Image (cartoon, rainbow, N blue to C red; front, side, top):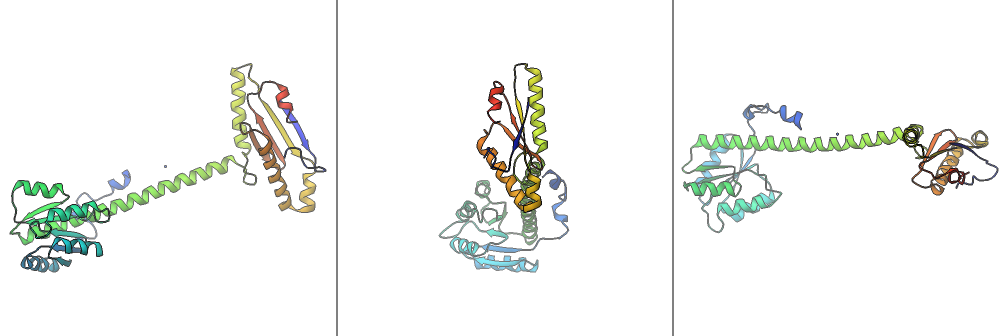
Length: 291
């Protein structure tokens, strides 16, 4: 059923989207293009001679070294400036290494800093405890220089790769969010009139097609289409300019939205032409009340 309604300008109208990245990672983490990862190492030990030996060895390898002689000093130093890795003794006065590590892992800001325990304790239970509180490795005293260097290199490389992966995952998530936003925006632009914000001809025709299919399946189903245009609209554009004409079209669209139920589809076909799709009406009288 098609109704044609004329609006006269002599009076106002009455209707007022990580798998690809993972495959790109090097198989051998020690063959990364940047080579051996350098960084800052915090050594925590209550024996100055241990700190001295470790510091000399690590500085020769190009690492920056910071020192702490107890757990409290270590925690203060980490909060002041995060090291890239911590070499942590277990048996210390005031606070043992397990407690220090637990506090570091409990803080989101320091949770990811790798901790390697270096201790004279050699029982399996001591090592198990070290790993249970968050340690990434365990070196037994007396330590071998090469062993310490290789384990430090390995865990720094792993840590840097994890950071890189996390950064790329964050960027990937941001890219996915941005793509979804763009897709949503493009979908809106494809189905809406930019001037009035109403559904455009494309959306209207899709809804009309669904109504026709429904009517074919159910002979008792009724719907109506109202067609509206504005008399002497060309005169408004020619005499007052297109900006005023655009304002008139916006006013018309707002009046239609105000007076027609949201269950109905109001669309701008183009120019001064509007349509209203009234789905599932009871009779023609219901459609004529919009005349």
